[in-house]
Image (cartoon, rainbow, N blue to C red; front, side, top):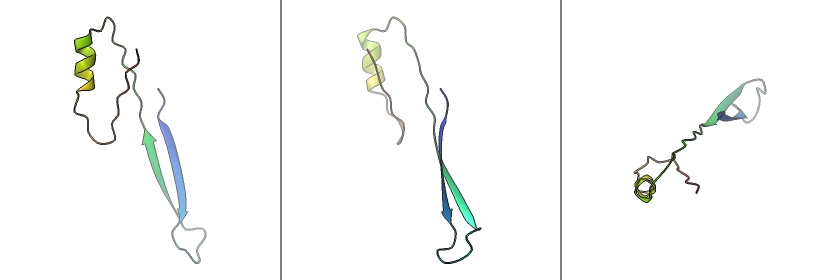
Length: 61
């Protein structure tokens, strides 16, 4: 899946120097994992995974 990129451009100075700008970006990476012939134990172990902050898992039936 493509990486979603959002770019934010802000002025460095609140008063003058409009040409001086700074850019920040956020990137969202998505991956798809297909599990064939999953058992209830497999689904349960995926639900109990300890994931770091900002990482989410979605299980579709």
